[in-house]
Structures are given as C-alpha cells and as structure tokens.
Length: 384
Image 1 (tube, rainbow, N blue to C red):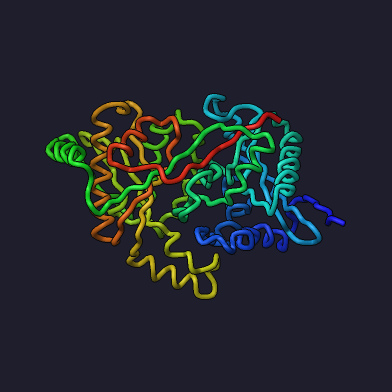
Image 2 (image 1 turned 90 degrees about the vertical axis):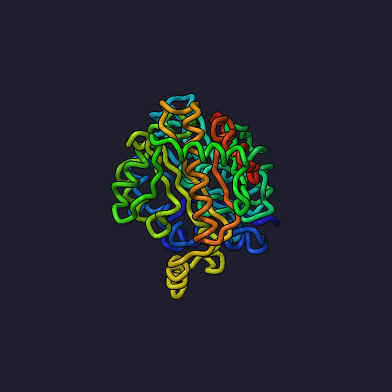
C-alpha cells in the first residue's frame, strides 16, 4: 500500500532544519550543485533576521511521506509587489512561490496545490515564480545550463522540475539569461577602440568604490540602480532596512577594484558591481561554517583566487540609456574590471547577469564583447 503524502507548514526548529537540509539529500549525487551556507538560508526565511518580512509575509511548507521529508515550497505575498504596475510583473492579486524542491512529480503536484490554496486564502488571483524569496534572491527555475555549477547567488535545479512545473499549469512569464565570457584574452578590437576613445574624453571619470565609506557608496550605487532599473520587469526597490542588511552581507565579499562608478562631468551616472564567485570558496564546506568553515572562508577571502567572477548588477541612469555614451561607459567599466580580475584574482572567466530576455541594451553589450548565454532561468505565471 502506497505511503500517504501530507503537506503542512513548517513549525519549530526541527521543521526548519528539515526544510533547509532537504536539498542536501536531493542533490547529493549532482556534481554541479553547490551546497548553500545553511545559516544564510535560515536567515533568509527568518522574519527576525530578514527585513523583507517588514513588507511581506510567507508560508513555508514541507511534504512528508512515511515520516520522511520529500519536498518543500514557499508561498509569499509582498506588499511592494502588489503596488507595482501590472506590466512590470506585479499589481493587485499577484503572489509568489519559491524555494521549491521535490522528490517526485506527485510531491510537486501536492506542493503547488497547497501553495496556491494559501495564496487564494490571501486574496491572490495570480501567482508568479519561482521567487526564492524575491527577485533579489534567486529568481527563476534553471531550464538550461545544468551541466556546470551556478555562480554565487544563482540557483541550480533538477532538470525534472521544468516538466513538473509546466504539468501543474504554469506558463512562461519571463526568461532570465546569464552570459559566459572568457576574460584572459581581452575584449574585441572594436570594444578596445571604444574604451580608448573614452579614456581620451576629459568629461569621463571612472573610479573604484571606497570600501572605508561603504555605506555612502552603496547608497550612491542604489540610487543609480533605482533610476536605471525602475521600469524593468520584476523590479522591486529595496527598502532602507534591506539596503543595510544587504550591505552587511556583501561587505566581506566586496573588493574595491571590482566595483566601478562612472562619472560624467563629475556626476555619477553608471556603476558595475562584480563579485568573486563565492561558490568556489564554499563548495567544500558542505553548507556549514562551524566549527572550522568560518575560519577557512575568512582565510580564503583575504586574497581570493577564483576562476570565475560574477557581474550581478550594472546600470546607467535612464536619461543616458540607448545612447552611445551609455555603451561606452559600460565597455570601459567592463574592461577596467576585467583587467583587475585577471591580474589580482587569477580569474579566467566571468558570468554576466541575470539579464531579462527583453533587455536588448544589455544583451547587445554582452554579445558585442563576445559573451554567450550559458544558463537560462524561467519565471512562470498561473491564474489562480
């Protein structure tokens, strides 16, 4: 007789542990999965630690069969998403789901049904996901590029998930692309000429961030980001509390020569944020910083040597977008950081993104420097 399948909300500490630990079993034989730091996941879903909960609520569900945890999912309602324009992926009645993992199709079907019921109970009429938990965490389901590990802050999912999600009635809303770039041999000659022309332009100044004044620099960068990305699909502005929270988490992995701010006639108008691929430094820690993982990571971050750099954020103020100057500033920042990544960190490749499928400006820049799509993440939608 088949064992009964049940789905219920996460309760106490044992349930939280089971929710966090499940992927470690499901991906145990996947050579390309990188174990996340368990404390980071616990912090993400803890209302006492994550300021996202100041404007959002979530339920975390686990599926059990015969007393064994075989699946998990989140369902969430974000007031900032509800206030977004509908053509940007939000609006009244839009809830999210995420953090999905399942042992088999039966478990997946049950998890989606329970998540959707919870969202309906909150008055939601449409759901979009996966958002784990928000667009700033790990958005999208990996549908191509399973054959190599993800970079820092990007997800990795079992190939079967795409079929299970689509069988539950979810359809394509957006695709997010990451681009792979070999960086040891320099950028194409055309781009080098554009960079050289910019270096001769007295109006343009490129500078590194000042980590000693990181809070002020972060506020400057996020000001540019809000202006540059404000109309993008899925964009939710970070609150002051979230900026502070993100700044504390990022500061240990921020290096001055990997973040550029571009100024035109003294006005900051563009930035590029690059991070060493922390996954390379944590892959052997099995998700645990204690008792010795923390010391290992601190030592490795003193002078990190990584094969891969990731460019998660890049932006140019709206008034300059679609201009030649915007492209020139982007190419200059890419080239300056490329040089630093190779010389100072021993890097040989970079991953750019994610980039929205309809962001033609950024996709054009990526293609001009001979970057190619290496992973596709799909965001789904469904009417409830």
